[in-house]
Image (cartoon, rainbow, N blue to C red; front, side, top):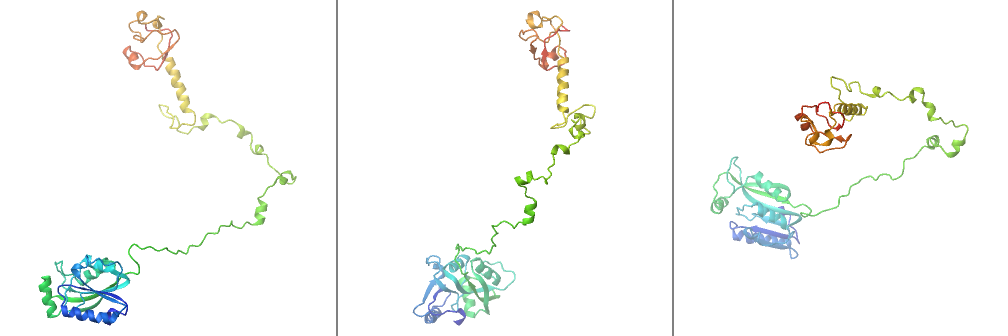
Length: 327
């Protein structure tokens, strides 16, 4: 019993199942009550009723399961999680379970030693370690066959322990970080350097201070207006078809636009009869203004591409009334 570290005043839970001998269970409980004394408490719970027993969280200092001599108790993940829940922070779980030592076993009932350790860790326990391995007694082998329906010659009885961390699940604590506070003061300034770069109003009247006129820094070449052609990029407008660069800033785009406007004005159709503005009744059969309403002499009239193409003319954008050559 000393291996379990049970002392007076502690609360101990003993978990048993149908494989636990009744006399051995009573004998174990009597020994535990003698160790815990009047201030402690020993609770006995069937493993099949543990999840429905509704024990309060952090109720026990020690939980013993499968420890009863002759028991062959198996522990599921839910049972291990419930045992971890009812343990107090820092409390210990001691359990004994038959484990399989064979390398290749495809049975989910009996775990290997490593899987049992992993199951305790996944339930939330720390410092999981094996305490003892021993062969099963003839009575325990018979119990495994009767209560578990499992037959194997490579079983061992493994006693293992795990500890609940010193905090509850979901608890929080403020972290104390030693971060050096930044100095709020300004860095020290060398008085000599500050005086060197300081200019006051009195210094402006001091004859020993020479001020330079910024205009004197410019020579005659700097004051000349640059030639726009010299501002263009070397490849700007080169090639068979002059084309301005995207986001042109050298003026070529404006120049090409003016040339385009002049070409449009020069290509406007001119009237030969001088009656185009009067309406369709006075227009020739090939007049580009056919179908358009009458307009005033000299008024600018826009002609569509379809009108001009239907009358075999070069498509202009707009037209000013003038002498028509073809009508």
